[in-house]
Image 1 (cartoon, rainbow, N blue to C red):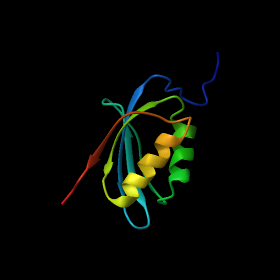
Image 2: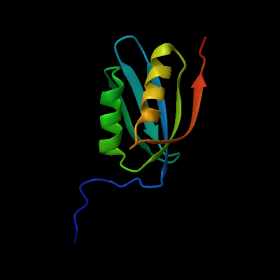
Image 3: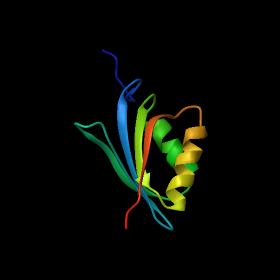
Length: 95
């Protein structure tokens, strides 16, 4: 029997919800049936990218994020990376 050490999300649509604050970001990742991850981390987009590539290899992300300047800059940076596929993105203006 082969042991699977990492899940493969190739072609699987995964939803990313993010809220970025001054010093950290809150992230929730789910697929409509299961919550796969819920975490907080530093606001550096590189750290988020490394986390997503490591844990959600091959996933197609539908992204919603808080539309402040920190959320927009992270989303733009992620879209420029070759190993992250973002199918759809929506900015949420919260008052």
